[in-house]
Length: 101
Image 1 (spheres, one colour):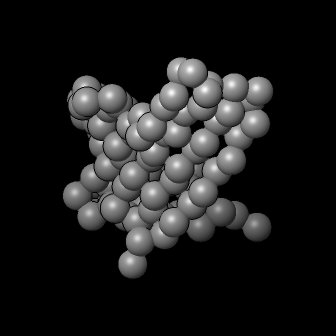
Image 2 (image 1 turned 60 degrees about the horizontal axis):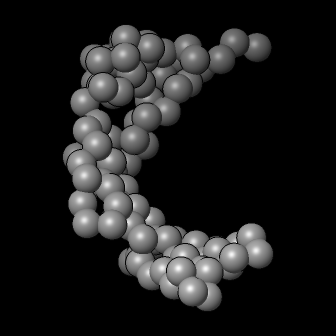
């Protein structure tokens, strides 16, 4: 049985591999050919913000830290989901996820 060919979202070429890439404009996953992945992959720029960075649709920041008690809370936010990562000085990690509506 052959794999179903999907058209590339950006150029329209039929794609056999089934590679999926997230579009910044609508934050949705689309099928992409290898050529378009090479072209579009370099367009996502890293932007430094206070206590973190923004990369495409994702923003990562240090939300809270205490050097005396030895913990840090890092947040990752996108249009669809928020993630908080809490790490203690002993290395225990707690992850909290919230989906946006």
